[in-house]
Length: 177
Length: 257
Image 1 (cartoon, one colour):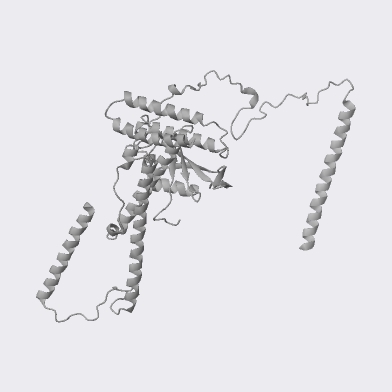
Image 2 (tube, chains in turn cyan, red; image 1 turned 135 degrees about the horizontal axis):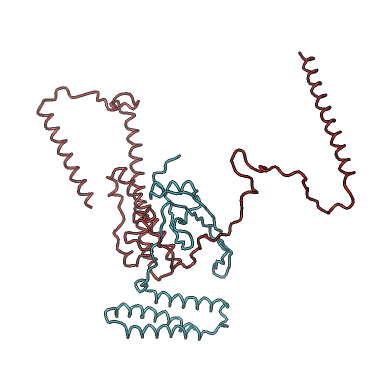
């Protein structure tokens, strides 16, 4: 066996609620094999691996826009490996409080982007009504303002900042339409 | 010898032929008898009906000491079978050991996704200048710390892509960037060390004081100072001890950094 002193690959643990607790799934590079993973987990993490199953997942074909030209591309395949362990392991719970991630602002902007995407799908002929996007945007802004009025005063500056950011985005969208 | 062998083989063949004929002959007679004995009013049963009572121990295994199947009831009603619990709330909780190795894929707080604020709390990457003075063991340990940190970040990133809680990707990317910078610095320091060793080897080959054959001591000074007096030696010793203490102090400083 050839010793590797400076391994330069990354493996990630995947949340698998449907698997039994004694199983764990990893996203690994394509070059890794079952014996490599078993040895790696044993020596680096002290996990006794009873068995490994591996699979390579082909990615779907996607359209890549290059200016006016379109190209069909397929991303590189992903390799996943499922190991069986002696001791069970349950993942920690998902974060409940999403305000620290600015979830509201994130979702609003994602919605706006999605709307812009669907509108640009008709090749700039404006067949899809722009009023729907504007309506949803204004509703989102209104909701945010209401929350700011009702919410506690300590968080006011931060809320104002997010509101301001969103206003500029909304204004840009309205000007274009 | 050959003729004798041939004759014995021929005799064996003949015996086999005879026995075969005998068998065929009797079998033929039996077949004719059975044909003549069968009446036209015979019931339409294709299975063999045995007039002689069957052997009682038929089917019993002499090796495994099993009784023959006729005496054992293979019927099982399954009244005392355990029922599966389909309600997940009634399942017994799985206890994860706090020393489980898979916790190595999570940060110290052991959360699935850290908030952007938590992710932003980090220092800077190691510089090459700091790593030049480290031993190989230290560099190796630091490399493995980097590898594990990158595994943690990759786990969190997959979870973030799946759940989409909001922002935080940028902070995680910055953290990953710094870890990779540290890894680059480690390789930089090691490459420099390797080049320095190569240069030293070149110099040593032309130096008459150094023996590279591997037999005996590597350093053989040819022209020693024979007229060195005692006080001079002590002064040298002092100088060495001074430099040693100075190095120690420097090392301590770096470790504190």
